Image (tube, rainbow, N blue to C red; front, top):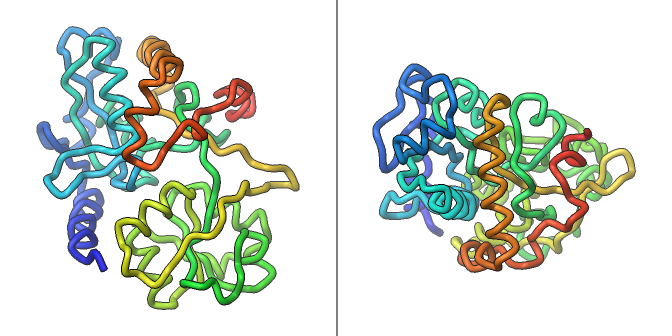
Length: 297
């Protein structure tokens, strides 16, 4: 088991509770230490620096063994900002459910954490064009003795499931009829893994990308990942797409970011950047997957 990884991530989780932690830049102790008012894009171009927020969720945005922040979203963000002439990208770590509140408190300028675009989140912040799409999956005991493969199976077989705090999977579970008493909310992926191993829950729900990465990092763990599937709400399939998040008044920054993100997608450079993190061409959003449709506009 990768217990050393647990210890390192626990450090970031506990640090996030006390306040945002900057990696590769000055510590951000409060909203007062964050970005100032005004045109964020112009300020970033003038200073050559911008701040991003992550949640230490692998492989979307995390600190590696050396302390360097990496992952799909930070690496894509670096490429985009570099194309915009902004070469100094500083990083803050907060818990997932605090990503948007800390953004709006001006502790950083962009959430780069692979956050799914949902109507509720669109009411609180502004999203980029979709960066990627992903399916859901379940982490289950090796062999999957209960044969639980979907949220509906969790409800029908009355087993317990772990979900990540602030993530969309809890909504998928309740929509499928899973009782609240059977849902355990945890702060880290490693806590979810340990809960399955220790039989505190039968399964854990996240994106297939996250769970496959987690198993890859913990090859001795007696668990496996189910086949990927598309969750449903109100009898309709849910399209899950992640993007970068901006404050609602930072339209110029968002629009400039979108312009360069599209170039990354269209050129094929995006695939080269994200492949090390378990992404591929199949994760590129289709043309009909738009921010407006995901926000419910």
